[in-house]
Image 1 (cartoon, one colour):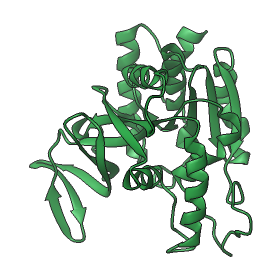
Image 2 (cartoon, one colour; image 1 turned 90 degrees about the horizontal axis):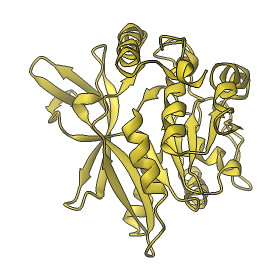
Image 3 (cartoon, helix red, strand yellow; image 1 turned 120 degrees about the vertical axis):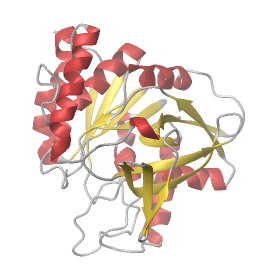
Image 4 (cartoon, rainbow, N blue to C red; image 1 turned 135 degrees about the vertical axis):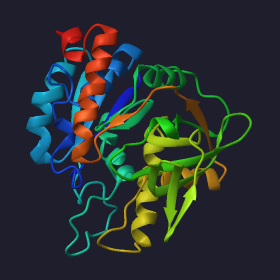
Length: 303
């Protein structure tokens, strides 16, 4: 069975100042997620599920879905606060913030019937990342533990010059399996090195540190774990207006119960992404250079 690509495209882009998931950044007007679709299809993925806000679906269809559907199956999953709520649960009055990345992946459950990979719509991951992920997902299951994969990027390849970024800082064992992942919400490159902020203190972080960019590979039965974990998350909601259910937390829940292992798949790819509006021009330049190097961009190759 060919794996499925789940693209989380429901973000609001508050720091970017617009719908960055559909912004035309490639030399032929491609959005970043068109690169992910193109690279994933070439790597062997057979289906794509866009997780979107309902009002964004027409634009996502026009800018990416209508091209991708000529090369893979395409589905759309709406993410809103009411979706996949456990029986008896209610959205807190006044809550408008989405439930987070784990909930976004859970919204795709009706369209996932085999192994799947979850990515952000506004991050460029590179072809070698999708090739490694497809190879992992197509391997037969073995053993009692759930097999999960995470693309591991070198921190130095994931930074922007325009401010801080959030990254999952990873610790791995000698076999290349994930031991722990810690969300660092303020990481920045300085002239004297990369640092993260904890309280009022900036702490150095080696530039070759392995970090997560929310590119995960899961078996189909991980959806059941997301569902039960969502109920647990809602039962102990710390901040009814802002708390989010994150994929790393859902994975960590399994690791702590010793019910899964996570293979970190090192990737040499350099991340491109648009966190801030100032990132737009550098990303456009990087994608233009990539097209020059590879003889074209996704729309040209898929024409």
